[in-house]
Every structure is written in C-alpha cells, then in structure tokens.
Amino acid sequence: MTIDARLRRNRKIVRTLRVFLNDVEVTNRCFYADGRRGVVRLYKLNAEGRKYTVPIIDAPHWAVPRRVATEELRGKVRWGRKVAA
Image (cartoon, rainbow, N blue to C red):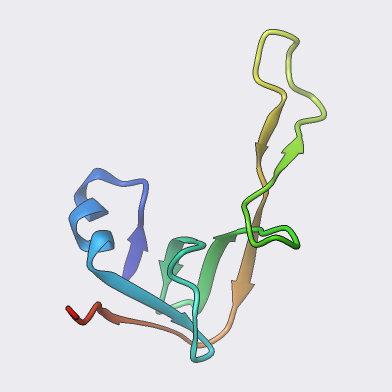
C-alpha cells in the first residue's frame, strides 16, 4: 500500500497515521511512504531540526528559485494509527 500526503484521497488517512522506517518514527518529515517497495520520501532537516530550502539551478527568473530539500530512504516501512492520549 502506498500513502501519498499530496493526494486528496489520502489526506484524511495521513492525519491519523504514524510512519516508521526501520523502527524509527519519521511521521513529521514524511510525505510519501510505500510499504511494498520499502521507500519513504522525507523532507530534509537542518541542524536546528527545521526544514530547509535549496536553490533551483535552472529555474526561470520569474519563478520562485527555491524549494524544500527532500531525500528518499529505503528500508523496512510500516505504519499504524496514532493512539489518542
């Protein structure tokens, strides 16, 4: 099963889901998870723990020349429901 936070049909599911990669929770950084292939796409974090942007080299001059940095990791992917406290 694939979970993509950008798709409209998955938005309700994503709000109540936790994602684990190799038994480490990556829920706050994750925007795509594929348990069958073992792929997780995450936003990169800087030393302060915040998302950071990188310049787009070939962007036209009228476009916003920066985007959020991402990374793709592979391993054992699993997810489960958040437990209400």
